[in-house]
Length: 91
Ligand SMILES: [Cu+2]
Image (tube, rainbow, N blue to C red; front, top):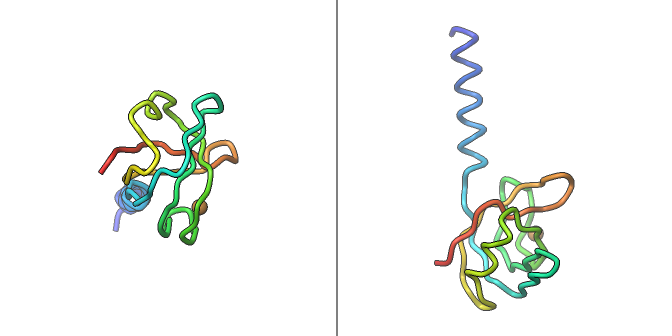
């Protein structure tokens, strides 16, 4: 296989692996600190078992759309050493 094509396929596979959305439940919202506490299931992309933990929000305005007890789907990544919610929506 052409090396350029192989590299492209690897990049696409990596992007697909990172694009998965996770299930969670909102436990606490801290608008002043731009933080969100989620109870989440396994996060395969981050190699993390189910737990309750605090995330930083990439988009602070998203906190205005959430309430404690909401079930959500979200994406997360480690950004600058901090676990960060990169996208989130109510179920
Ligand atoms: Cu966690």
